[in-house]
Length: 74
Figure (cartoon, rainbow, N blue to C red):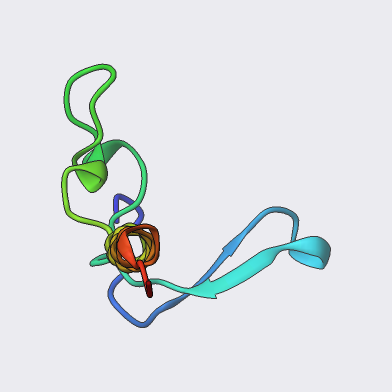
């Protein structure tokens, strides 16, 4: 941004014959702008869908196990 890049501009970093080239997208946040105070990361505050699915599956297993343990056919 400081060099005048705008959204969609091609940007090259490194020597011309071996540069890393990408389209500049300033709305992508990564790095220092995402950090809070030292030791904090706001990305971990949001619920994680995969973790919730694991908890749901485990709850189903626990319920099935309780039903099995409580089953007495005779």
